[in-house]
Image (cartoon, rainbow, N blue to C red; front, side, top):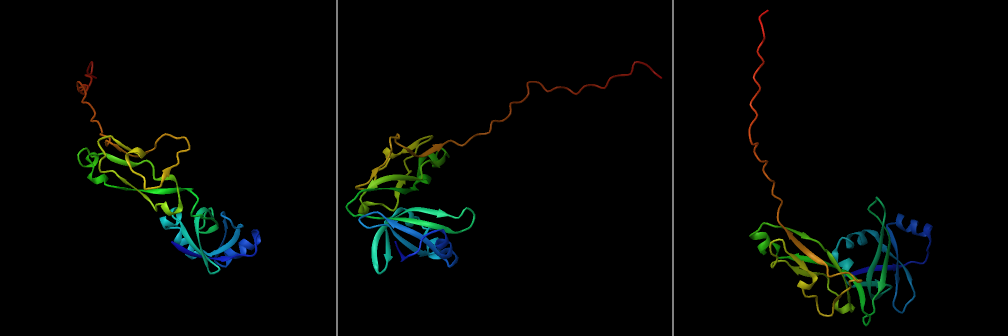
Length: 210
């Protein structure tokens, strides 16, 4: 995925505010062998790019001053209540250096699983993204999780799927994560009938005539 950035000379709160007024978003590119570089992007183009999953999870091609370099999106600062990107960070990519990045999971096959077809389970996507380590050339746009083998009240863990070639999960000491689980639907229990229905009380008879 490709985008266009422009060199930015001025920095500081005031300069960034003036950029935003003109429909631009300030940013920075860092990492690799080069010095950090200030950039600016067209806000509308950036806003639409951020709606695409690939912009967050793949190696991007940034055109800057006639040169194209490969970068990763690293941070986005949003306005607390406006639909506005306040600042954006990119990291240069070295083709020979492994990197860590979060990759989204795409689930398929749950409607064909026994858990859904036979047992009418509800399927919960417990984990929606994985942090992985790989070379830039091996970075997948997403990781597919096949749920067609899911059984009644069963789970699918990371051990049940095959990661793409060259890709390793970054666990930070955590146990193997559950990716999806099947749960039987809750059944409303009918209230048990009363052992004996209470008979309506007979009206009290008067003790005497007036």
